[in-house]
Length: 291
Image (cartoon, rainbow, N blue to C red):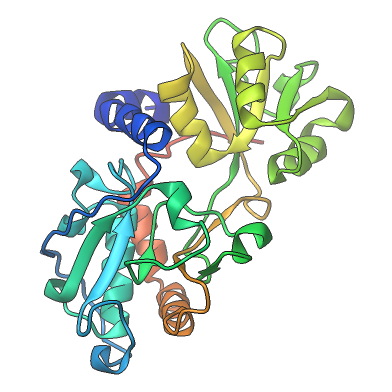
């Protein structure tokens, strides 16, 4: 089953709502909820020794709504969904019991803007970039996204199963992105058209000016299901090294940046993150690899 089919079946309503929220909201709203998940693993830190927004509590922010497969049913306190599960695993590493995790909601843009925050860490598919590091801190990455090809139904390249099948296709990318590097390496510079923004790329595909475009896989899945009429995720490239790395966002110069990074690193080393990725993302990102 392709991801686009899965997403339409399970998540398209939540994703569409997320789009509206991101477009229409400029300020954060809080929606605290109690924790109920029961992550496993040994705590490696003492929660009372950590400086947090609320003493004895770990306040974690995410989007509103938070959509699948990152958070199931827009309920991060359930611990269900990849990012919800990762958040509780990190909290456990830091020495916080599930009932001491407090969830709040923020917009994406406000989270990465300079200034004080009313949360300790924020998780909602934030790519780690040097530009954002000027305003906020990042943990080490908990997930690396591959690059994928998006087209639309009816385009002769929409059914491509190999990189060779895309020979002759006009492929768009946004300037200054890792997608450009991957597209040029796989398809050749002569086949790649560069646009100023991803919105311009998407518009070019809709207008029939290009046959397909390359973007990171999570964006591809979202855009194909929500933003494009008849959108198709054609496939993903095999090499993940050019993908975007997702990390927790923390307030600039937070005392928690080092402990959270250590927690993420520990979860990577002991295989917890790989296990959670398999549990929560394997079905949702069932996208063929273009060899």
